[in-house]
Length: 330
Ligand code: SAM
Ligand code: SF4
Image (cartoon, rainbow, N blue to C red; front, side, top):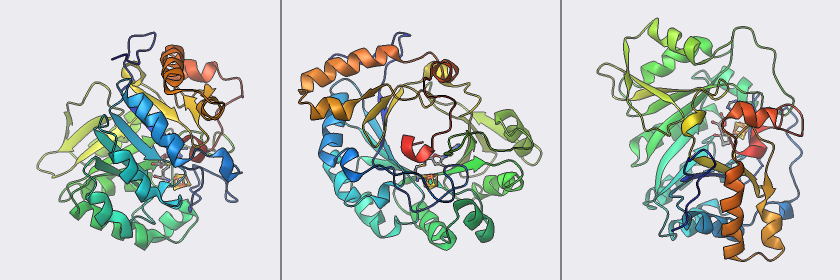
């Protein structure tokens, strides 16, 4: 089998696919209050196109896909798409990142799809008023009850917490406490300027080191060994059921072992979160490319994968990082 190997010898086995750029929330760190300019529907990849792209990628050694957005559950028939994707016998794992506001009624059907293993639920505060302020929508109780149902389900649950200086930093250890009796992973993510307008005013710089210090100020933690390609450094408090991860998304100390590529909702291939899009797979398909053409294209595009996120950012032609994460897929 031909495999996707970049020019630094890294094998690509993981793809993150944004199924939409639409979202029902308006998180402060992701987009402006008025939202983003969403693209016309016909510019979004269709489910058939997504299925085909993933199929070709799995024929090149990809085994894992994460579906994200925008908010994946906003797109009509998303659960049917999960089912469709499950038919791909070369795919081992389907993961989903969601804000959780629309997931509750689908949990049972998702549990029935054996390839869907991990749900990452984004929740940045455990206080209703703060949560609503961050997301600019009143959906805290809906999201928190989804969290409780997911925790009891057969799906593995990870919470994504974007650490926002001076806003939810005083809750870091409350989130760690959640892992005492819940079998979940809480992952703290460094905030990045992907919010529709660029770097926000921040006070203190809450990078991995600072987040770790905060946790160590209250808990005795030990580091848990992780897979080489993991995006996080992982820790556990002794005798706690769950664990804690810190994702150095902005300080980018995990790039060396990167094994992933991204496809945006409009079908743009991104070799790195920080690049500004490498090639329109959608246009290539819509011009009549065969699966073999697609394979050859992927094999050559991954050779352009930059060594790390700093190089990707320096090579951008569209200016500084400022696009909304909702258009990239997080
Ligand atoms: N709507 C879904 C959600 O919020 O989980 C999926 C898409 S969202 C873009 C994917 C992840 O990116 C979420 O965990 C979100 O918190 C994170 N994210 C969004 N903007 C970010 C930013 N500027 N810095 C760090 N993480 C961000
Ligand atoms: Fe929507 Fe997710 Fe962005 Fe929040 S982080 S606005 S839920 S896409």
